[in-house]
Length: 362
Image 1 (cartoon, rainbow, N blue to C red):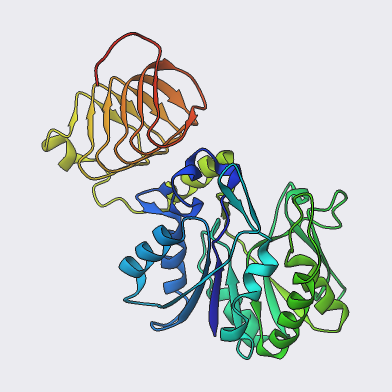
Image 2 (image 1 turned 180 degrees about the vertical axis):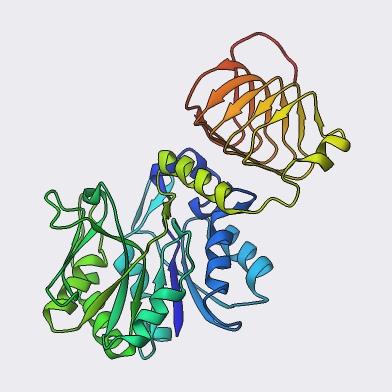
């Protein structure tokens, strides 16, 4: 079985954070998003499994990092998706369907497991594999019942529990089963899958259109291929938007086991001075906290300095320097400096500087 990860896109909904890094490199609860995903995959797939990453935006950054951190377990392959064009020096691409098509030469005669880089299941991926091998079907799609299905690909089932229709972001959803970041296509259908993707790729695009995967899956269903669902019982963390990133941070912090839950070692080392930590909080390496109240649900990166801050429900990037900040539900990018600010829902990208005073502390 081949694993395919389309990771070429810019991640516009997560700008300004994605100006300097791909969206899968956002750091939450001490790890990049792509690390969290690959750890889940290691729990489900054996060592030596082939993964093909379809790269584009920040391709060198992605390729070098993954080779350095995950090549000891997975056999990594990289294929570049060329941009369709540029908007103000930012590339845009022709869509998920065309990205997957690039893996044709590697995977068209094998089972293919496609996973997205901005969705993280709290569960691992074992159940989708089990459902595929136990059921007589051509493929399985990961789904989750959601309250707002109009924002997702939506699946409607027939009386036998087989997928009847799949529609991308319908205005009038027929169910609340939302596609949740993973597809498993058996080798019985992969040849036809890539034929349809190739036909679609020849269709002219205009006005921001993209070649999607969803209509191709619907074509396969109409041709008689049998697809089932794997309903995830645990949460699926959607990191595609800032507001969902905050929610995902909260769930990840609840899941991880902090080795020093009372932060005693950090207090003894004087990295935390005259401060209160309200768990769950993740504190990165070489971070110093003084005269502050931090938590609950705060992820703090490495080499951060917090002085006289009150923070909750937030994500603070590596190397950030915050002084006299009172905030919640905020995302602060790497190497940013904030000073003298009381504001909820701060969202600033990497290497930013914001102050409301004339102080020159940094």
